[in-house]
Image 1 (spheres, rainbow, N blue to C red):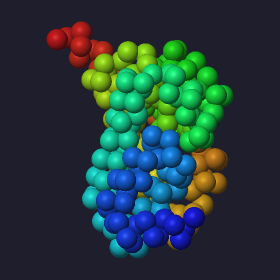
Image 2 (image 1 turned 90 degrees about the vertical axis):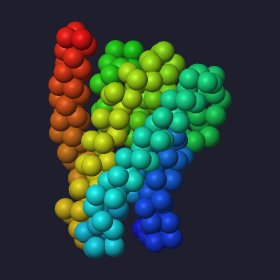
Image 3 (image 1 turned 120 degrees about the horizontal axis):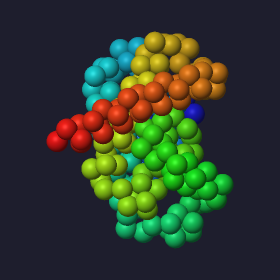
Length: 198
């Protein structure tokens, strides 16, 4: 795992971050959280700079999530049912995301990034549920920034212990979800207030 990540970063640098995250978001079996944390570790070591790393992560995540939305808009659920299992998107994950999205759509667009297996589907379901791209982007891009910032910063803070992110994520995921949910709720009310005042 580390060898592959090191090869990706050393050969492609910042562009590698963008390409890997685009692939990971649309469903390719890439360890997104591990990749982001490893980027943070490279920042800790001085091999990469913090702000360009964040910028490239945001670009990759936003491009990936937008591409996923576009695929959902064009092809809908049949494509997901047919090809999903080939990229580890199971029927169970599809059903969970569908049910969550029907109840908490805007919130799921933000906190879904923190739920492995769900983040690959949120944009797709936004398109299937006829969200306008503007509405989708308003929430999904906030989630993208929050998610990328969290894991790159975590890798930078952990330094040599960066590879323990999986353990830390499992232990504190509830806190992360709660924080992301709180931000989502605040953002939603601010956005709704802005719409009502215009």
